[in-house]
Amino acid sequence: MNGILSARMREAGMPFKLIFGVELPRLQSIAQEFPTDVELANQLWQQNIRETRLLAIMLMPAKDFTQEMSKKWAETMVTAEEAQVLAMMLLPKAEQAKEICKAWLEEGKTLPATSACLCLRHLLAKGEDLSAEKQAFIKFKEQVSNPNLHLRKAIQALEAAFEE
Image (cartoon, rainbow, N blue to C red; front, side, top):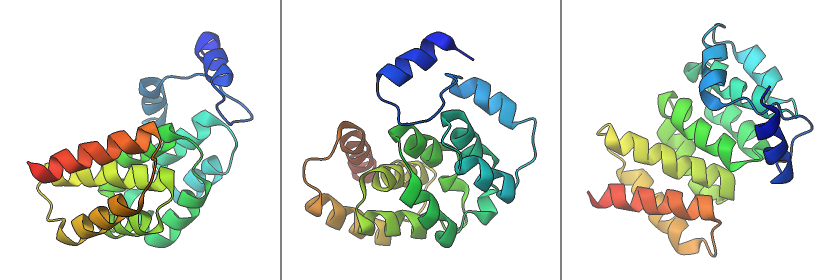
């Protein structure tokens, strides 16, 4: 536990019952000690604890992160940190990543859309063809009004990547 970081996160209004303040690199190290497991990941995701939710992302097998499961996770995503970690560590590896991102953009909810934009940026950098997703992004961008800081930055990053 990092008491100082935990206290700062709590003061900043993190919406969790429990926050240990464990840094992301340490959580990644912990996750490497366990096999990926869909049941364990789902149980960890259901906890109202910052660290278990981030570990859930790291322990979810990418092949099992389907559109159906992504809907459940999108509905219960509560922080920009979760959206960012999901976009970095799980979503780009999912077999249905493009479809999930497109659906999240079409739905228009802030945190899933943030994750979708960041994931699509990652996929573009890998050379993926994102023609259909680009159209969904353009439509999403036209409809979104007054995005929060995290979503605004994700939109800008994806726009820049599309322009390259």
